[in-house]
Image 1 (cartoon, rainbow, N blue to C red):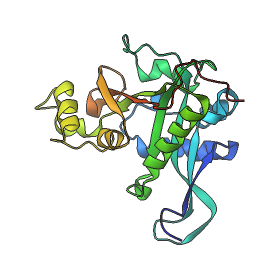
Image 2: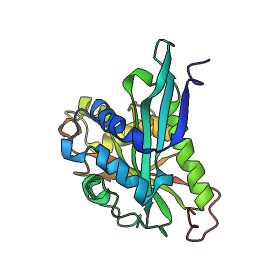
Image 3: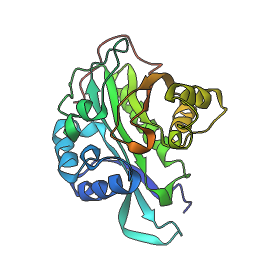
Image 4: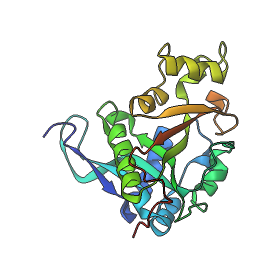
Length: 228
């Protein structure tokens, strides 16, 4: 079994919830606790929009040893919404409704990407890309316009003394700098529409995030279809 074959992307299930809460702490140590999702949030997502959350399960440890039960090592979550790209300013906390996805609109024509995260021990195995692919497949299935999100900028902390957030993002887009999150998003077909100030309660990046979008090339031009 290859390292890639040892990880499966599956729909959210209830038993994943406490493991996903732990994954949030591991993946986002600089994020304020109030902006990390907890087990009860993930259980609520099962009621709100279960189709919108994907979980990466590893059947093997990083050294290749078999695991039973499997280990939760990745997450891709989000919900449907109406989003005005001409007036995009918002914060992470408000749009995810404190983690409850209370702004989910079953008729929304955009998928709002709340989170993609991969456990550090399982990075550089293509898991993040597979989670993005699962989201894109959902957008095609539901005939949505695409994915919109605020993207964390973990690399900005090392450059904020010399660059503004706008300049940093522009350099990443141009290929002059590499950001662990944004560079991967660009490789997976996202485009940057701008930056969001005070998006995250993240002191390392001073709250800045990118505003990114992936446009569904198969979108029919309609308002999407039901998940049922």
